[in-house]
Length: 89
Figure 1: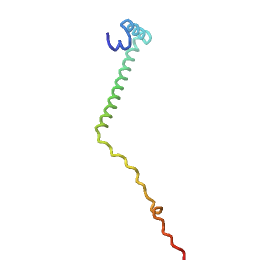
Figure 2: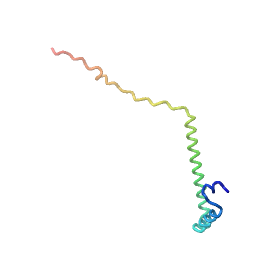
Figure 3: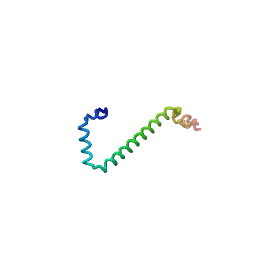
Figure 4: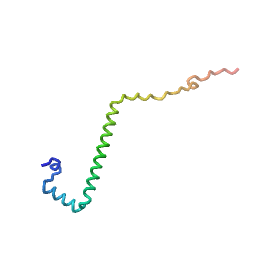
């Protein structure tokens, strides 16, 4: 028995019944279209998965980016050094 069918819990007779029900509901003309769409979906999924994996690998292989520096604070020289008071004469 195929392991993928065992996971679904389908025996040979049950699988035949499901296939007959699909054939009756959708017709023989629609099944190849469904299979083609399913195949294209799997292909796109594998492509996206491979792109994400490649992106992770390239990010791990790249040298680390320098840490961002905190913005420098501009000191207000007028507040730090108030003008000297001149006594009035």
